[in-house]
Length: 72
Image 1 (cartoon, rainbow, N blue to C red):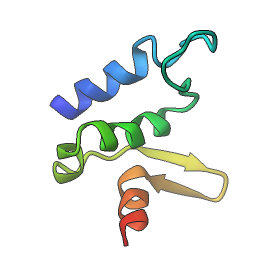
Image 2 (cartoon, helix red, strand yellow; image 1 turned 45 degrees about the vertical axis):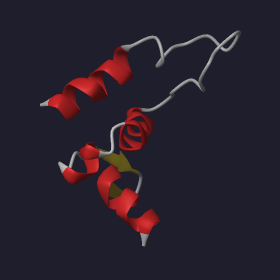
Image 3 (cartoon, one colour; image 1 turned 120 degrees about the vertical axis):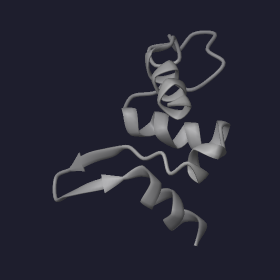
């Protein structure tokens, strides 16, 4: 539940729609980017197996599987 709350906080906070001028961080355009940032900022999310599933034109993807693919 903590991972879910942190995910939605990142997604719905000003970071999601932050203006480009004087911004401290890059704007987030898609929810899967939020999940990747959550792995960086809150590493227990990986241990708790937090994953966001999203659709690409040819398949369904998981942010957690992509994260483990980067580590290998």
